[in-house]
Image (cartoon, rainbow, N blue to C red; front, side, top):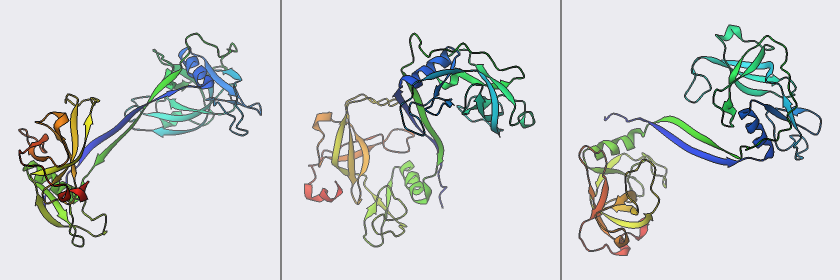
Amino acid sequence: MPEVLKAPLVLEFPFTRSLGPVQSAFLTGLRERVVLGVRATDGRVLVPPVEYDPVTADEIRDLVEVAPTGTVTTWAWNPAPRRGQPLTTPFAWVLVRLDGADTALLHALDAPGPDAVHTGMRVRVRWAGERTGAITDIACFEPYDGEPAQVAGHSGAFDDPVTGIVAPARLDYTYSPGRAQSAYLHALAERRTVGERCPVCRKVYVPPRGACPTCGVATVEQVEVGPLGTVTTFCIVNIKAKNLDIEVPYVYAHIALDGAGLALHGRIGGIPYDQVRMGLRVEPVWTDGARYPDHYRPTGEPDADYDTYKELL
């Protein structure tokens, strides 16, 4: 049985968002080494601040400066920091109620070990050397045994306020394609394309899924398809993708390989983009050492009749 493949994958999306007046003041304050909260309708000071009262849903904008010192209300030790976390050495995640606030702020505490952390310990903000108007302007918290820091009562009005942030969302995981798709990928490395036939509806799935999504039964019978195929539908790409060395415009198409019951995706080359059409007969083009076709090009055959691929659109 061939080796089941696996590979690390990353999904990443840099989400850009605008800020309301309260969040703008809070992040701008961090840039200026000022911590701001907001007063709720019941008088509590919320840190980090929110734009709407969590109890009444009323809009709240009464900004209140709080101290950069505070008390740990609860904590958890992190023995193995991951990429993107505040510290690269083991640290504690802590909820800190800053002096003057009624709610707690989550951040990292730089401590030599879990024995040095306890609920009720006093801490203070360690500011980042370079600050841009983000929560990372607080590099972390550190132990502190002094009196609560004094605050000047900042109004929350700043020159050049921060109006937007980029919040990258990222997921790192290890993907295993499983038995069926591993066999498919191993065959591609040999410049063959294989699918699996459903024992009930007899449709040949390419790439194989290991089961028929229509009939709900396992598929094990391998069927070699192609290498020629037919363009069923396509789109013209006019926006250059990051880290993809292909000049725009180019064509990305659904291609029904001969003998397959499902169209797969592929790029069309070897022909001007405005001459690609439904029914175009194509063949794969491989590059040295590649595990999959680089693109598909016209074979020179007459176009396929619509009735031969209409069920694969």
